[in-house]
Image 1 (cartoon, protein in one colour):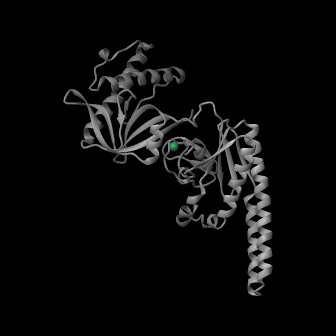
Image 2: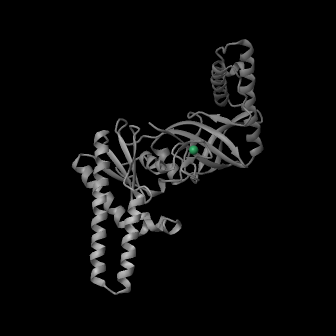
Image 3: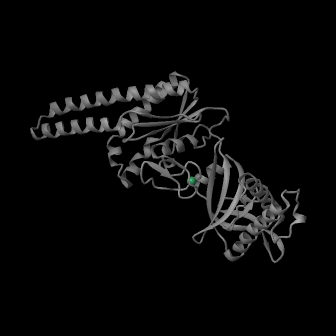
Length: 349
Ligand SMILES: [Zn+2]
């Protein structure tokens, strides 16, 4: 099951208090590891052994953190020192509502589960509804507060089901990523572009001469060439799915392509919607014959979002690099990875 991190923005009334708690948290971790470095061992500890101004659930987490820092230290021989304020709450102690999160804080010596107004996107809600929740990490970034929740996302209804995400594009006609770890690029975007341009130029010439029936013939010919290419690509994609024993192929739903086309330089994509549509229909048809189901996911789950933590990043070169969590991969894989990991509920993603 892939683990992802949701970044939930929230709005504390008293950020200073959260900063103090974050300081306290790393103080506890740093002091414990320093102490255990001298002792050369990490004994069993409970919250009673540690003096800290933290709710016991959070203090428990700090002790656990100190233990894993200690283990790391034993491996590397160097004691890492936490510098960035942080505050961890385990899944027993926080809750997430529609536009609210709640977790325990220490205020005037008393523990209180406190509610905070939060921005929880539709995407987050969908993941939260369908996932096993992990730790919640409270951090401040450039004055903004985030609750980062790590969750295990089921790839599909069944845990053992193998899934393939397919991203269609112009530069690379199709990218497939499977939950078995395969990535494959299909088709030749540069050649397709050349073919299209060639037809366009011929059309322009004929247009000037007002040779309409010749234009129609040319259009049909272009259509046949592209159809042939789509047949080949869909065959290869479904063959990979069969080879990898994939039971679900996920594709982008194409109805929204026009929306993305307007806002981006993907306008060319819009012009070739029929070709994308045809390719997805071919994949769907061939997959069904092979007993593989096809589901369509919302196109918003693509190219810019980090497949690991969900942050939005723009790929600058061939490499995609997440500013938030440091995840890197080939930029053309990102879309397919995201399409693959969208949870599917009741057959609708
Ligand atoms: Zn990331």
